[in-house]
Structures are given as structure tokens and as C-alpha cells.
Image (cartoon, rainbow, N blue to C red; front, side, top):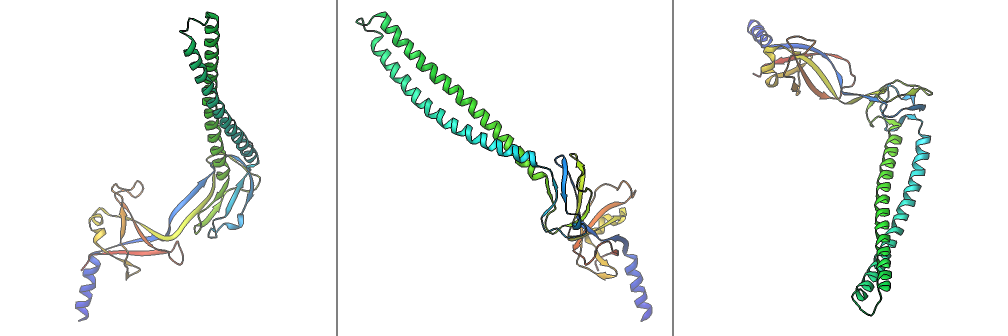
Length: 267
């Protein structure tokens, strides 16, 4: 009986492939500065802790906020000016209509002198020019308002980017800056990890690629309900002749633990 059991175990091992991998966080996030300026405050104590969604790093935004306040006031004034211009244009068009009707009434009358007709035509032309001038002013106001709205949106975006956060529930792994540092766009400021799930990365032999997704996965010699999440279709640049594969697992009690991963044929 023992001999038969030994043969069975040997048969299983011959149909199994063994790999080792560390449990890693599901994803790493490296946040880089999206705006330049002096670092005004840093919550260094947050390193190694799970984020609560608060501001970790604040970059100087005082001038941006003053500019934003000034721009909002200018925008309000321009919009009020546009409202008045629209009313003025409406009135001027009415004047133009009246002048046009007056000119049409007398232009063919023989009882009216040429001087009178010319005077009425001049009044109509002046009224039309006034309409054209106001329409031009209105278009310029629209352009100025559009430019100012874009500037305000840009300032709001810069101010937002100067308050650096990591998503709530993520591990704050490392903060690279200190208070008083000057950061430029693209400079690394903080690394974080998504620890809501774990990830195992293994490098499959070409023989195992075909059967990997149909295999049972044993973790430390225990059958699991895990499966291969994805397999890269090209060989890895460092592990030559091997194909990178990932297994996604529930969040472990601790990361970086080395696990034995066994791929066994389904019986």
C-alpha cells in the first residue's frame, strides 16, 4: 500500500511545476510633482502608514491663489460688461431700425431736399456703425472671457496639484521631499502601494505556458482557489526564455513573504 501511495505522489510531482515568488502589493504608484515650487509642509510621519486621503505634501501656492482671486474678480466684471453691451446693442439695433425706416420714407419724396435726404442717410450710417462697433466689442469680450476662464481653470488645476495626496487605503511607502525643498515638474515626491490585493509574479517555462491557466495552483503545498490572471506573450527581457505571469490573490496579512507556487495538472 505504501508503495502504491509513493508512486501516486511521484506521479503528481512529475505533472507539477514549482516556482517561488514574493507576495507584492497589487500596484505601485510613484507620484511626481506636477507643478514647481517650494515645499511648505510635509507629513513625514505618514511614511509606512495607510493613507486616510489627506494632504501629504503642500507646495507653495500663495501667488496662484492671489492670481485666481484677481482673475475671478476680472471675470465677474467682464461678464457684467458683456451684459451691458448686449443691452446697448439691442437698443442700438432699434435706433438703426428707426433710422432706416425714416430714410426709406423720404428717400424717394420729391418734396424733400437732397440735403435732408443726405442728413437722414448719415444718421442711418452712424446708427449702423454704432451697431457694428458694439458687435465687435461683444465678440472681443467673448474672447477675453473665454481666455480668462481658461486661465482660471489652469490656476485651479495648478493649485490642486500643489496639494499632493495618496488615495485613501493605499500604503504610503516613501516620501522623497522635506519642508523647504524646491521641486520641479517631474520630480518624484512620494511612492504608494495598493495593498487591497496581493500579487505573485512568476516566470513560466515555455512548456508551462500552455497548461498554466488550466492548472491547479498549490500555495505552500496547499490547494488554493487562485488562478493565473495574465501571461505575457513575449519572453521576459531579464529572465530569458521565460514568460512573465501574474497571480492575483486576496490581501495577505503581510507582504514580501516568499511562497512556494506549484502548478499541478487537474486530475
